[in-house]
Every structure is written in C-alpha cells, then in structure tokens.
Image (tube, rainbow, N blue to C red):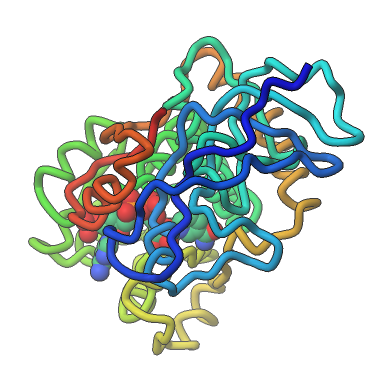
Length: 332
Ligand SMILES: NC(=O)c1ccc[n+]([C@@H]2O[C@H](COP(=O)([O-])OP(=O)(O)OC[C@H]3O[C@@H](n4cnc5c(N)ncnc54)[C@H](OP(=O)(O)O)[C@@H]3O)[C@@H](O)[C@H]2O)c1
C-alpha cells in the first residue's frame, strides 16, 4: 500500500536573489528512478554553495533538482528499480546533486550511508558534503599521511571543522586561520593544534613560526586569489596545495620558481560536478575508512544552529552573517 503524499513542501526559488527568495512552496514528491531511493527528509545540511546557487552564481548541473540542498538525512520510504526493498525503513544520510531542502528527496542508493545510533539525524545530515569534500581532497588529491601538517583557511566553517575532526582522527597536525579571536578559540576547542587570527597577524609568518621554518605539508584552500602565493610560501618541500573554493577570486599570480624549488603540487576539485561512479567509490571508501568512527561516536559534526525547513531564509542569513561556527541545519 502506497501511503506517500502526492505533494510536499520544498525550498525551490523561482528566481535568484537574497535570502527572501527562499519561501516554502508546494512541489510534487519526487519518484525514485532506477538505482535511487526516496528519502523522507528529517534534516538537511546548509552549505556555502547553496548560497551561491540562491544568488544565481552556481546553477545546478543538468538533470539535478532546482530545489536547494546538497545533503540530507532521513528514512528510506521507497526504492527505484534495482534497489533492494529491504532498504525501506532504513535511516540514511545522502550526498545529493540537489533537492535536500524538502520533505522528500531522491538520492542514488550508492550515495547513501546508514545513520548509526550514535548520531542524530541532524548530525548525520551535516556529514556528507563536508566529509566527502574533505576526504577526497585531503587523502585522494593531497595524499595526506599520518604525522603530516595541514593549514586550513576558514577553520570554523563547515568544511574547516570537518578538516579539524578528520585531521585529529588521522593524526594530522591541523593549523587553521579564522577571522576573529573568538573563532580561533572555538577552533582550538574543536581540536585544531593552532589557530591564527588572520585579521590580527600575518598567517605566513605565523605558520613559519609554528613549524620552526619548515612549513606545512598541505594547504586546504577555500580562499584563492591573493592567498595562493602566500599559501605556497607556507608549504614545506614536497608540499601540496588543494583549491576547493575561490572566495577572493579565481586568478592568482604565483612564483613558478617556488613550485620548482620546493617541488610543490597544485591541485583542486569540485565535488558536485563529479560522476555518480566517482561518488559511489568515494562513499565506499568513506564507509570503510571513516564510518566505523562515526558509529563509535568518535567523529561527529560541529553544529552551529538548527532552523525549521520553512525558515531556510533565516538559515542563509545566519551563514551570510559569518558568525556561525560549524554547520547550520534545516530540520522538519
Ligand atoms: N570544492 C568543493 O567540492 C567544495 C564543496 C563544499 C564546499 N566548498 C567550499 O568550501 C567553502 C566552505 O564551505 P562551507 O559550507 O563550510 O561554508 P561556511 O561555513 O560558510 O564557511 C566559509 C568560511 O570562509 C571563510 N572566509 C570567507 N571569506 C574569507 C576571506 N576573504 N578570507 C579568508 N576566509 C574567508 C570564513 O571564515 P572567517 O569568518 O573566519 O573569515 C568562513 O569560515 C566555501 O567556499 C564552499 O564553496 C567547496
């Protein structure tokens, strides 16, 4: 017997703009296509790319829903062709191409991970986007190894707090930057080894001082622009620079001599555009290497605040205020 409703509440703005465009609207409940599950959403994570999408600067890839939301947690209520019916009733969190800001969403079954008893649905909803992004960039692109050091800008962001948590789990020394002493204090509480207030001191000099002149092995950079040459100055020999965002611009002038002299590697990636096959393999790698720590309660996201789905506009205002530490979550 199918008891699913025909329609649902979702945040699906019909034009780009400020937070006020995020009004709850009625939309058809999506259907699970072959290989997909339909999730009754309990909570959805808010990410900076959602703000870019709302402003019209980051359109959903072809075929992705226009409803916002790159991650969600909830209960599987239906499955598409080729997906085991036994999944129905399972609590899962999922990496989405879009659609999380809604009462129901669909996800490829291969991008779902089970929600263990150790964490809440709100916590689970915060994991996929940051965990998949940080894991793939740190370990797959930058080859992070136990004992290495890492500089992370935006240390109290959703991404930054996940980088601190993963760094602690995998024995990396994490140095972060943040824009206030208060945020630096929080970063240390969360587990950063050092936190530099970039408004009060020069992070290049501070990194040199902290590392005794050696530099760090990896920079995880969400700032770009004029930070890039300064990041390269922070890197040790054989260092790796990973770009994941360009908040201060896409263009950077760097010294190729530095790259040659220190044998640096410059790389980067964007998660949303990757193929379903890549995301499936990444989910499997995370399930194998990280999920046991989630199950034991050793890895959990830092939550800043919860907002009802209908108040998505307030959630975006909170993120755009820059006052948050960790993740902002929409709940039912
Ligand atoms: N490549 C990918 O696949 C991927 C995936 C997900 C997210 N991202 C990117 O990762 C970044 C973080 O995402 P999020 O959801 O965690 O966002 P978030 O919580 O809003 O964090 C943004 C952070 O950026 C810092 N920041 C902003 N402007 C800055 C500037 N001019 N200089 C230095 N720091 C600045 C802020 O720190 P302060 O207030 O301390 O300055 C803030 O902590 C975003 O840029 C997002 O687009 C990339």
